[in-house]
Length: 139
Image (cartoon, rainbow, N blue to C red; front, side, top):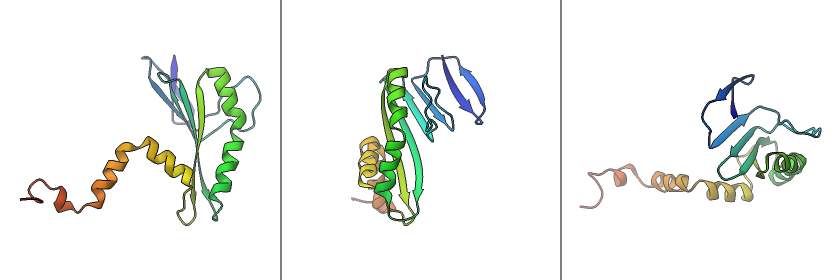
């Protein structure tokens, strides 16, 4: 039985067994009291047995790496509790963007690792439109 959150407060029961459950703006119910139990996005993959906690933040200065370390430490207790209660492998992905648009190297690696399709689309975007058009290009 899985629940999908709609409009922050109302829950609707999902009749079919879903492979992936995405939750946002929802506290995680645990056996122990954990102060930081509300990440921005929770993605639980029931087939693979994984859970990803995503926390998004904007850093005012250039302290992107420091903010990333703070978020990982902030959700350390929650990850161990989710692993114990839900019996899944849990990982925290901090999405930190600096005020000047900087992102950390670890987030770049995660983005490239999980988004192989987006890499292909970036290659297409770098080419001019006429090179992608079927009637133009090589003769």
